[in-house]
Length: 308
Image 1 (cartoon, rainbow, N blue to C red):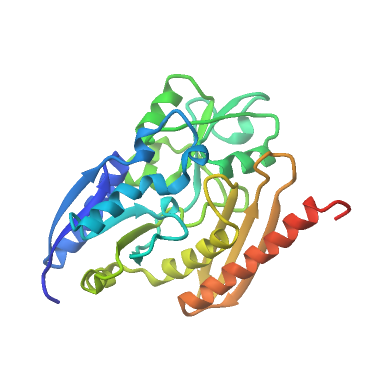
Image 2: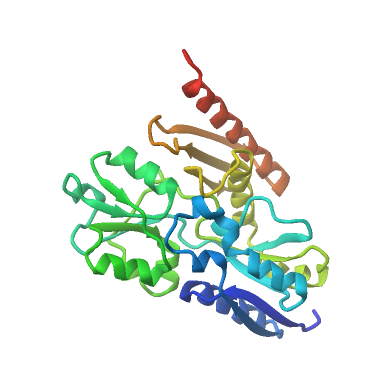
């Protein structure tokens, strides 16, 4: 393959830079010359309000897409769960890399597990999905918003503002902070977000040369799983304003996907759905995810229709 000179657009948080450096190193091993373009996004700047109230996941990718559009960068590396389900015209998801641990992690200085928390303890999270699932597990807890990058969240915990916080295990492990994890939640307990733990690489749709370069980094089992997960979220109108979980696992060519919808107001009980099918391509994975989304929609209608 011909060697390329490539620029990666990335957010400037420590985790985002780790992810971009990881991709950079892999591409350099193949003989490409790679540099980073660090950028601050709107999502990084707005820390006093929840993402669901200020524009959702797209706040973390817009500036990076502008850099791709202007030709300042050739690719952008994202945490896949931060990537909107519908990309703007002219952009495409070229590659999904092998997934890190997709689970949620329990982090606390005083309590080894969620079960150990006393009644009324304060738990921090910025995710409506986690809020809904935590309420289902422990309705007696006080759940408060927690924004900021990984280091900021950990500092707020260490400063005593929370009895414990819930974070993605993948981010902690990537930054060498696995020792902060007191426990990981079984996905049966806390179903992960669509794409959690996976890295997605975005390019301009008119850059087949970059897509070809990234082909060596693509991990097909992860690509199939997250395609199903993202299909659930897309059909459900998935955004930061909806408590929605979707997680798929591949065993041979059998893809099993589970999804959970939560009421944003926290009044209605959780709605669960799942499906399993033989899957060998992204189209089949997407259709399975859409099937699960329709199950969820039926469950939600049954709960919200009078007499349903």
